[in-house]
Amino acid sequence: MDINKVQSNEQIEKDLMPRAFGPYGKLWVVFLLFIGGIGLYYYVQQLRHGLVVTGLRDYTTWGIYIANFVFFVAISLVGSLMSAVLKLTNVKWRTPLTRISEMIAVAAIMFAGLIIIVDMGRPDRFLNVIFHARIQSPITWDVIVITTYLFISMLLLYLPLLPDLAIMRDRFKTIPKWQQKMYAFMANNWKGTSEQHKILNKSVMLLSVMIIPVAFGIHTVTSWLFATTLRPGWDSTNFGPYFISGAFMVGAGAVIATMFVFRKFYGLHKYITLDHFDKMGRLLVLLSLVYLYFNVNEYFVPAYKMKGSESAHLKELFTGAYAPLFWSVQIGGMLIPIIVLLFKKGRTPLIMFVISIMVIVGAWFKRFLIVIPTLHHPYFPMDQAPEAWSHYTPTFAEWCITGGSLAGALLIVTFLVRYFPIIPVEETIEEQKGGTNELNIERGYQPQIEKI
Image (cartoon, rainbow, N blue to C red; front, side):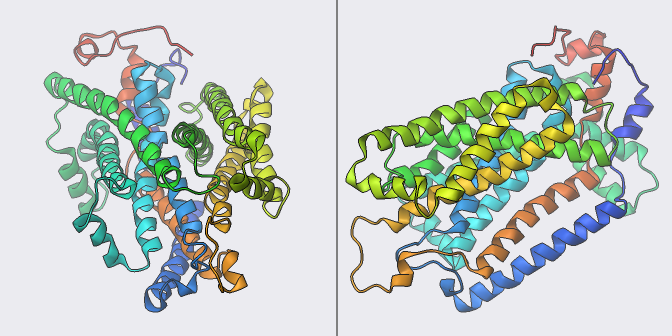
């Protein structure tokens, strides 16, 4: 936002407050409900008939459900990137993007947990993970860090909302009574005093510090689910930073795509500016280069040694059945975005939206390639197993359930946007003031030169 073009508080509130869906918004909700309904139907069929409705067999025990789980965990790290890392490094331009990223993070981590239950087949088996937990199992660690990360992410979304909830509580008089009561309850007696702001700022800062190691932990532990299993393609000490760098990359791509949609359909051009796209483009290039480095490590070193256990797996990726998908992901989901975004003309909103979609789609199929091909090369092949068991093709039911989970996550973000401001209202107003008055100083806002 151009701070030289100071607007009135009333205008900012009018621009940023949530509004009812228009025709396109209603169609979007209907579409997501339709996709989610289909996914729910096939999940009920899976509950009735068991995992036999999927393509999972004794050879391939993990399929697109686990790929989807890893993808959701990766997307969720965008909350810690935008709300914590950029906040603690005093990057001021992140303000219009923090709430968007937290909404994405909360929705993604919720469905990461749900998709694991879907993969178990019987939901009651999840209780075994709790009642019969083993501390030496990465699955137990995963449950702990996912729960912790969800709790912190929800707090990081809710606490900065308090001032805006109070504004909606006091200003929205024509909305339905249930909505007024919801805002009044969630505002939690917020008065906007300097003491309340001090407590709020300290709480948000503490959560920002806490969420970074938890965010690193959640994806590191997820990578250990693979790395602690003696399988070709997974037996790697590189998996922790490899997963984290990839998560930050796809998270940045998700923020860019969401920025473009909200900017276009909510008319937020004054708040999500070309400068924001330029800076997010540079950030995405940096994150992509880091991820490229770990990709080179992950594939070049095993390819150089070509151990027997790794050879068949790498050949299948490089020149075999999975080669078209593998090279499409590497080129379309990583190399092309880097090349395009290196140039300023490539960091325009529409081009960046297309690039971000390529990054997101490439990231999902990247997780598919991590999970599936290695299971085709067990160390001890099973005797007299049907030939079909040595191959894995997701069934229509699996695709529908997976699509339903993606639609469900988008639906959560959609409804959050419907009832809560996309961009922090009070924080935007205070940035317009320049942060120099006495109350701002009490709240911890200090005028500083923006760093890129």
